[in-house]
Image (cartoon, rainbow, N blue to C red; front, side, top):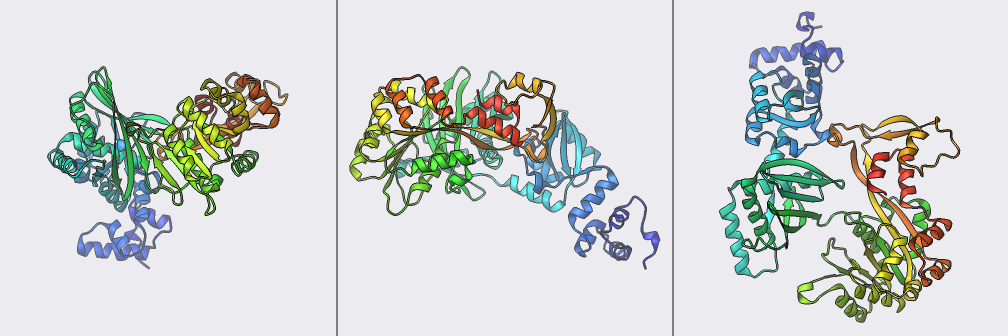
Length: 564
């Protein structure tokens, strides 16, 4: 048995033995090696296989009172990490992880380094620095990840000479701050799971925001003097005219981040203080979503499946931009397509390549519009046609006529709800009798944020309070003073203090029945169509949102934000 004197109360060894991680004999062996080699006791214990780095970190947590955090579990918030110059972070072995109550929590190899803490506070704009304990391996890996620059590969339909020009421009710009900033933001966006990047010139600053789970988050502000260079850089990689600043421009490029390839659609819009830039990220080769993964209710799924397997008809998916319409359509195509069917899609742009489909890219400059393409496609013997979007009356009429001639036609439309699609077609000039004969169903959808499972908080609220926000909340004759348990967002490091992590779809599916066709022919209002659909079993978007509240999936605030 080792001498008890080796166990010093309050030491790392003491806490490891107390936690039954190591024995006194193992500690004694490690101390003997330390006396000979002058290394760190914790590292020696790990090298000997007596414990793990995480065990050492937890012991340091007990010894110092600094919180232990697993970077692998919470992930790296690149917006927070970039508050400190990466060169300084690497040099000092530090990494900002998250912000809470105006304090910056920083992983530090040496949490007792007061000088570094003071310097970090200055670099972070005077914020209070709170050191946290992490394993050296996780910290080094995270710093290496941040150091990896995004690899941007431009593509365009340009000729070889133009491509050479772009490459030379890239070489010239390689070391400039604008290039580094754009690359950094793209990398941050990809790793944060953002769908869009916004570069927004203000009077004195350039604001950068990311849309994550449907909500914009500001990640940084930069001096406005950088804006012109940033705009030029984005135009170069997007194949746009650098000299033109008076009119909107569209472009596209491809980037590779962490061995993942993304197509980026770029929109440049002149504003008062300069050109606003929006970049939409679309991952290539991302895993195809199946209908079973879309979170339909059981009743909705059954009705939807029966409808899409009809031999012909016109099916619409409606909702605002970014509500997941394209994802639903791709999942639908994956469900109905097989070796016996010829499936053609008309898209602008082709967002996801799918095996077994004939996917056609629209090109309005060359006269390849949805309407023109749809006319041609019908001569190519299709069974199923997917039209990316009904944008005008001409496309709507051809789509309806295609459905009447024995084709199954899927498309999208911008309406607030499913019944509104019927009246929208009427407004676009489609005769009601044609709509009634061809339309088989309308799926309206939205995406709502899901409460973070790690921090969501159960609360008790009276029906009286709840009905003030949601008058249509089912209360089944409950007294106003009766209470109900629901969940609300709280926020933690795992969800970047938003209280939400990920999104789910909510749906309302209108199945067109014979009774409904009579209403459509009579040019009934959307309210009348809605009333009949509800009588026939349709669950509205609002009802679906309330169901998500009752399940504990989302909050009242989120339902009110997304669903009117």
